[in-house]
Length: 222
Ligand SMILES: O=C(O)c1cc(=O)[nH]c(=O)n1[C@@H]1O[C@H](COP(=O)(O)O)[C@@H](O)[C@H]1O
Image (cartoon, rainbow, N blue to C red; front, side, top):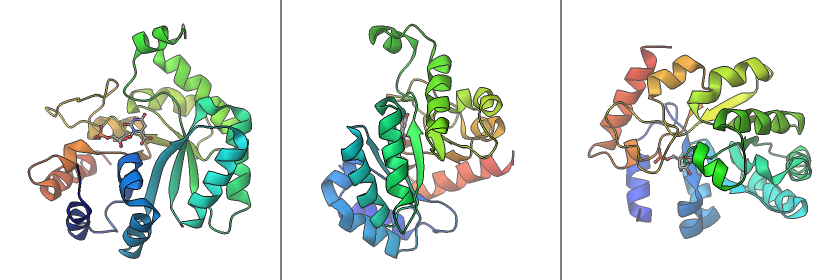
């Protein structure tokens, strides 16, 4: 478990101009909006990853509350459907501060057999394409997908639609619970806009050095 002190100690070593910070379900549930405000005060853009998935009215109110926190980007599940996605869009449009809205297509921890278990007879790519098209139609700023799907999505979606890619694993790092993984360099080569990288950095013996190595790998292909 990451203590408040561990989180702050790591953030103090990072430069807000060289990376953004994602606050997800674990940290938000433990430390709440107060952590979001403290990290914002350190100068970081915050990606609030709470993956909202609920009835439209509830998501509308939750997105409005997240927008009031001043975050840079936030997530919701595209599978929540068009009314839910449009309710989120309305919330941002009516907020003073306007975070980017990105819809999760198919979690990077899922593969074809997981879809089959849910009764979905499509490949991960087909499912991601379907949900990404829906997200675009409903006014999202982008989607979360695996970098393995980015080149196909680029052909399907408008040029400035953001493609945010977790499931990033440097060569030799453990996949952990991720199934659709791509290396940092390959993700950039494919055309990802933003790479989401957790354990390869947070669980590294020297997190700051690991981040620098990844940034070096990426700069070689940019
Ligand atoms: O929305 C996300 O950020 C997300 C979507 C997805 O499909 N897969 C995924 O791993 N994530 C998040 O991205 C992060 C990846 O963490 P690591 O697997 O440790 O690099 C986690 O915080 C996940 O919650």
